[in-house]
Image 1 (cartoon, rainbow over the protein chains, first blue to last red):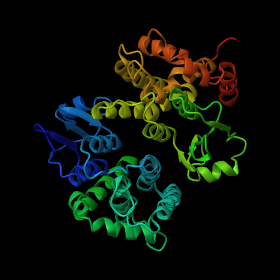
Image 2 (cartoon, each protein chain N blue to C red; image 1 turned 90 degrees about the vertical axis):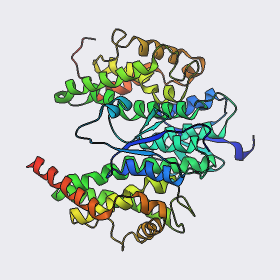
Image 3 (tube, chains in turn blue, brown; image 1 turned 60 degrees about the vertical axis):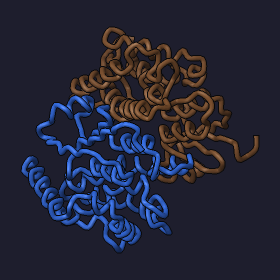
Length: 225
Length: 226
């Protein structure tokens, strides 16, 4: 519902879960936006100027004004375009959603990165630690179609990191971090996500994505030799 | 006040995270019951029940439901008690800026300051450089405002409480001087405004107790005479 022309631009990266979650939010709200693929190895002047503190994607530019940090961006989108709310309205439910979003980014993500980044015993320990965290998410999904309840919400959008990044690295790493026997609810949730048009549209295409993950892992191995 | 309305805070006397919650409740004039949880000695069954995931303080209990994570709690308080002492601006863009800087102070700056004071000697120089960088951005963001929130204390000030109070004491205890008045005059002025605020000063833990705690837990790094 724009009174004047609304210019929304996203500085992002096709394979980044943090960038993709912003695209999901914009798409859920039906907001047209310009996507600008950023080269992280060779950062553009616009990126450096828009996010001088972290020099990272994603950055949302709304009428030229930059917002950085994916969770901050998601809340900004919800605050600014109030139809199709992503966060729950009730303050307590909102707090729980914020809690879980942080849990995904600060706990699951950090621990899961070690699965990719380490080898041998250290990797095994990282797998165990990741599973312990995922068990909590598994519990949350009992009796629910989505983490947000009956429909996709803030936490689901943030947790696509688990569904389409962590779980995809399994193929490349050769370790079943999230086996279906241990995590039936999470697997069911991923299927539910894939039934949502916006999700299908906004996640990186699997083939290309797996190639990308493989290539990144190989270059990491080369670096550690 | 009936049971439903009652607010409880499970906290730790010396924790900047715990104090954030108390500061906001007091600024908004919300009465609460404070329960000290000595997490280092023994985590009580109550704490384990109310924050089973992280088993940490602070935890806020309101209308029988519990919330963990200090900045999540602060936003909950803001969302629930909407008429007094707003911690966030109304404008969505300004809100996003406040959340950005609160996260920056909480995630990045606090950690680098801590590491600079007490990290391994081999990493000291690098950590101090990172600490300077972190503080430099906050110094710029603060500018000539009285508080990060403008004329009143806001989310960013609360998130940066460690920098305003605890850090000065940590510097004294460790002997590592980073946030000096010469390098960071605005942050220095701000920290004084913050700790002298009538409400904030009632909440802050006593300096001598914190000093003793820091010295005991972490020992001394730089050699300095008494």
